Amino acid sequence: MKIEFYKYQATGNDFIIIDNRNQDINLTEENIRFLCHRHFGIGSDGLILLENDDKTDFSMQFFNPDGSGGMMCGNGGRSIVKFAADKGIIKERCCFIAPDGLHFATIKYNIVSLKMVNPTLFQAHQDGYYINTGTSHFVVFENSLNEIDIIKKGRALRYDERFSPYNGCNVNFVEEISLNNIRIRTYERGVEDETLACGTGICSSALTYSVKKQLPCGTHTINLSAKGGELQVRFEKQSDNQFSEVHLIGEAKMVFKGEINITLFQ
Image 1 (cartoon, rainbow, N blue to C red):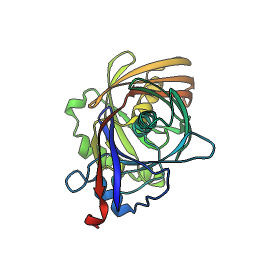
Image 2 (cartoon, rainbow, N blue to C red; image 1 turned 30 degrees about the horizontal axis):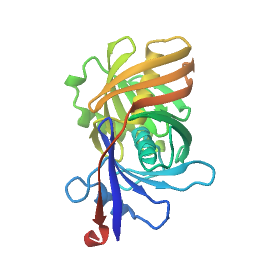
Image 3 (cartoon, helix red, strand yellow; image 1 turned 180 degrees about the vertical axis):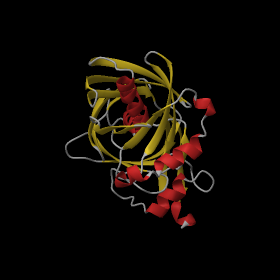
Image 4 (tube, one colour; image 1 turned 90 degrees about the horizontal axis):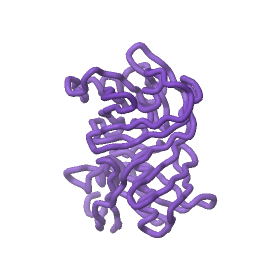
């Protein structure tokens, strides 16, 4: 089976995107693991299928490199909006359905502003904060990210028994640079490694930062620096565990396109 694919990146988070509006591509978990493999396949932090939807502009199906799905990816969402614009499916605004629900987005040049779902299940722990912004996240505040073993500490928290009801979680380590400016590093579930950025993790970190800093209720914009670049999160804080109008804002670009015959590797 020959597949046409596109490689996109959003703040260093890279994705394989496939136009599946004809519904002629059915990938197994093994196929997805192969395509995402950085040595034997194309290589990516995830795979996204763009499909038709009767009520919105399109549907987004997201899969982790290990083949698991059923969750949202913020940078993947920004990437698929850019892809849809490049393909002429949308213009400057769109509405699409993803595993976690309905999303709205705007795009101007390469800058995508993606409206995320309202977060659910906010919990404060002694060592950090648990929050779901479309997928599960744990946010830990540190004095210096340069001194943290991200893989070791991230993996331990990812598999912490506290989060077993949620099938584990992504882990974000946050350092404050100045007021409303923070630095972030993320260990991603499903990738099982540190990634250059994580959109839902960016949102989770910005929201929990507003709680830790006791920012007042109202509209806030937090600037975040990840390994892959700069992002902004704009949101409405209603209380210390309620947020709305959460927007993830940043650049998304196509890297290259190609074809691959997946049957050769089965």
